[in-house]
Length: 389
Length: 159
Image 1 (cartoon, each protein chain N blue to C red):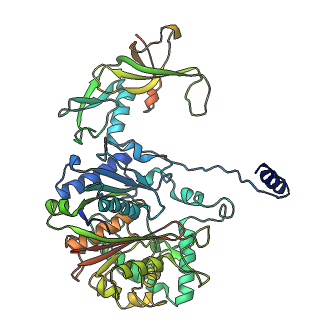
Image 2: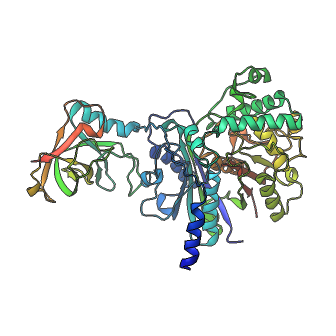
Image 3: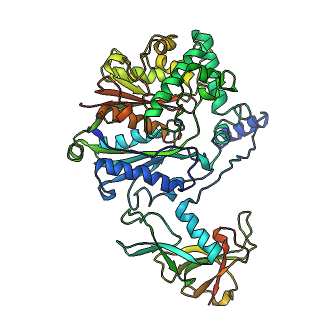
């Protein structure tokens, strides 16, 4: 392993469907200023700037080139990454690698997406192989409808379980000042009464298109200790790539595929001496565009046995007050500025480790937290954070 | 080696190889934001070209920007700059292209307006090509029908 690296500054914008008041660079600047304020740093204290978003989602090429001034990158090194849905976690990983290598002592990493400027589904359906994906790729909603169908048939989970997850998410979102959808849901019936987007996926079973950005400042050990009294250490990051069905699917209809989440989790746990994930790790912020996907991820990340994700929901284990809270921020189903979404997972997990999550701080003491990212044809990035190394 | 290549080419002839032609269509709606919108509105409604000033760095950005690239200050001090300026550099496009707003030949230039610290990219017209030169003085010619676009400045013409 390289040098130790900590998160020393956390900033995000509030989230909405539309932001007419700012350009894309101006929106990103809000998150950067928030992170700098949190770290009590000036732009000149940042050595390198790394950005990430879903290029083409806004119908624009090289958006990072147009925001150099607004993100404080003028005359600094850095680059932009795009790995699909995981991109906002890949940029954290990239900053982590650079600082761990000793090349930089400080790095600003940014995820952003201004979905009111583009057509996300048009972009997603273009991100397939023209040979056997074109014309049969559905965009995200169709993919997660397939996933929901597969999950309910395989595990016996009921729509009520998905509704419980949605209720849990909304409870968190209502307590999170940065969350997008704050619905104030009172009962699972409200979820079960929402119309189908694509059967069996209901409107309330799926994430919104959000506009927002998230920025983190990373620092090497000796810098981190000077910058903050509450560094959050990046213990490890694991990325696993997969392309199981070419046109993209997040479920496993064959029941025989090895899944990137399983492999990523196994590698992360093995490398970090984690034998009982829900005991050794205190909470998780996972990338769940739909409530059905959240249940599936409980299983793939080994938070429970296979086919029993819905039982964790039934027992309230993953509630904010539960034994293993998942997505107390409200998660992706409440807020999804795609390129920023995985960065927000890391940011929210880090806030929990710091004890600074405010109203949505979980009951359990969080010394170790996990953040996950999902994207493309089932790619996975998992990040492990710790209060002390 | 040459024989091997020849052999491969011969084999390829016997294959049916598909080539897919496509076109990616991605609609987009770029937001000008509050600062960019005010810049465009002043041109549209008042034929005024406005910049934002950073008093710390003594820089006037035209077109108006919300952040100073040198000191990262948020800029909220608006200043009107002249509609006259100096041609910093130029090029001439002779071939037409779908995205060009007018027919070629088009003179593209970078103009630094009096009072601005920065140059801005635009087009020149009414120019005697023989006299086209770096350093020439130019003025903004506004479009009669203005809609809130950078092309509300129709072009820059020699003074």
